[in-house]
Length: 370
Image (spheres, rainbow, N blue to C red):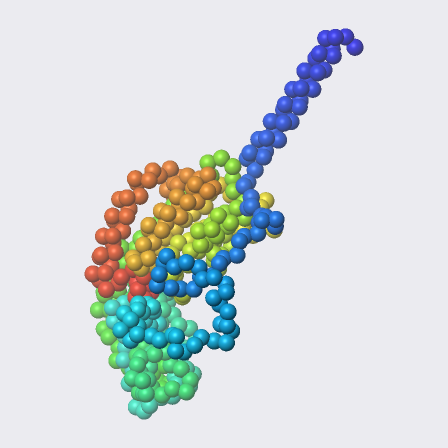
């Protein structure tokens, strides 16, 4: 082999090695980012429990001072001043009752039976479905002992009833056909309990439904933003890991993560969605996701939760942690200043809903905007 041939062979080998190295580097660079597994050699430090106290600058109590606590505290050493106790903050609890019929968003027909009706008899007389067309249908009874309207329950006695159907929801306004179906169901229930119904005028209620539906359509805000990967795609596990650090938990559907509200039982503050097929993959680290959707259903969350502020914080944190960019639904990048006008419009929307007694996050608003 001549010197030229040997030189060409060496150059060819170097070029081939460079191509292989470049392809390997490119594949690694563009591979979906994966969730970081926990390090078994460096477990997370256990949280040190600190008992509540009034002095934020209090120093830790030496271990020796706890000697004898297993015998219980001395009652003489633990007295409570009444004035101090009255000034302590009281935990806030939600007193909002379960959604019931309300003349603001429901057609209500009184049903007066000849005699008191048991809850078991009322339950047996209820129709099999709780809808009239696309609108929720409900029956409530006036409890003889508590004098409160409630859904009929076994073992209770009711002196009056009322049937109702919702005027509007996101499926549209109550129409004549749905009103007629409501009358048929309410009449059948009234006949079963030997009650006399009093139905309102259909044309008047349908007109009221259209007006409410128009207001709801003009004030129904559902915000959705897209987070797109700048370079390398994300795996489903990587998205879940970063979202979990911000408080998100798995939703009811694959590819759906939710940020829970402050109180249990309320709709989530925010929703993070991504490709369902990637969420259903056997290995979540092998899927490739290039965009996720961050959404807020404004009418479902009370303004005191500051959901839009939280959305901006979550979007900024995810973009920084995942090397992403915030975009609108069409994929156009949004600068930070573009979010300020949206915040101003939302405050105006909140005021308008408050003025109609349909405050965002209230029971009535959640029923109407559903």
